[in-house]
Image (cartoon, rainbow, N blue to C red):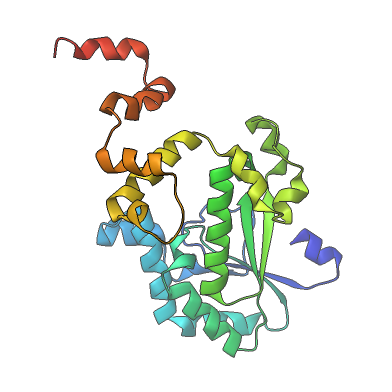
Length: 245
């Protein structure tokens, strides 16, 4: 809000997060004047996730309230704070429908997706965030800007494998493959899946004959299949407890 004010924009802050009850500022429009997650959880005996979904669906059904509130701040630059629950932007339609109603009011919107920077420290988490962001962009049908947040805390999670521009520009992701852990375990899983669905027995591409025979005959012993998992995740001392079982 302060930065927008520095650009001479008259700002109106809109809180659409019914669980946001610890604000250090007073929003111009606050969904808690319409509904609160605490009331929903108490009345309907829902958990926090179900409560948030209910609140946004309730807002969708009562858009006249939001339209009247927005009419009071017409002409201002709107900063809209939305809930952080991911399913509201990936497959639930309530927020999408609310956005579409706002667009019909001739309000130009852009989605700003805040991503904790610590996700860059783990390859699998980074890929998950990318997929979540893409799904959100498709679901919301809005111009979309990703912002890495909490960059001052990123060093807590160790040195990044690449410079920040690799993550912000989403450069060639093939380089990140070497950052995945336990690749051998994943190869074993893929091998078992291909065996189960018959892919290894197909004739559409050349394959190593020895590997095919090994898969077909189930030549590996059970201990060999899990040996590397045992070494990675299970304390050796734990294995002795099963001998007398």
